[in-house]
Image (spheres, helix red, strand yellow):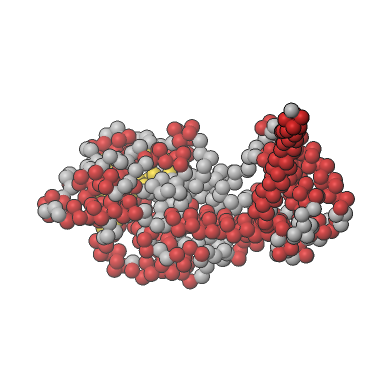
Length: 579
């Protein structure tokens, strides 16, 4: 009996000991694993900081005591130069011949030495050269303070030995992780939780302790400077890579569009010669009709321009469309409009290679254009200066780029009095707008031949939707004037490549300003265009590199273009072209 009682007591005491010591053991094991996991997480999160000794520090002359300038400000000239290069891409509107461009040319961008002259110009003339000048939304004070504390904590952490596992190192790592998790992606004080405020107070105590352990101010300053310099170097590198890739994507023909051209070309050559003829060709020379011109090698883009122009016109039967493309895309372009005729309107498809007078008379000048910059030397891009020669029987014509969508009746342009001028266009000289451009951004006004002929303060205008009086053009022989400026530009650095600066010079004092609602710019680079502006515009223009048919296009504007594309067409389905 005594033995039984003794066994019972031992069993009860054993169970009691197990119930007491097991939770203690499990809790201590859990805490050990938690500290181990946190340490491993921070090794990955803070790897850059623990290697801070290897950071490349800035030049000491930049960081003198009392110098309150930011490193970002020191890079202003570099940013201006890059903004101008992006501006060059955006401002030239349509570019053609994307398949023929070499990647080597993407990085060959030059700046004129005359930019130093801007410092001596009146204050009213100086503006930011950046096209996209959208200020970032400022963070609230508490969020800023929290981010600053995290940076300070990481800087203190870098002072600890690499293999240190002291209590302080564990504490500061834990505070950093807690505060970063509490902040999340919040950018406003109103979005901060009560927990975030508590974690910030805990961080204050840890930072106070760190300042006592590491009282050397100069070491902290040098560390922060090195961190800032390294971060800006990485940012600059990523920005350059992004710019390169965006420009490369802009000049690369998507596989779907290439497939569509091949399908249409195959079908075109299967037709009989009489089946390749367009109807109503007798209207092509009628000066009393509404003539539109589009120069492009993009089938889908041309279809949107033609369809939107015809669908918004009051008298579509009086519209005549003249499309000029290259010999490679002529069959595909012809087949598309044979299969999808533009309603009651008349259409003509021509190849630039069919203009024998152009290849013979202007061959030398074409070579000069190639010498300026191969990216903008496409014959289609400069063909707009030969409109009177291409259409000798037409008196007035509206020129449209292939990256526009027409939203209102453009035949009303024929009833606008352009007051004896040759060119009717929308001006782009409103300060503060992303489309703002000034003549001296692209033309070298330090050259005496330019400074004596042009006024740098003259309001500039946009290509993409222009009404030209071809009779006045012929009287003033502006095509010869264009060749004169092209000749000057080939001898010395007079202007940047592209047709826009040549157009400003050729039509200087020959341009009448149209109401701004006729032509809205910026849908190919400026995400700040509002719906109200789009609704008021007669023509919306995807000028810039982010075209609506490319993956890099501005998503919120694509619907204005996509709604006019027949994605249910069998060829588009076969080529995997979709919204």
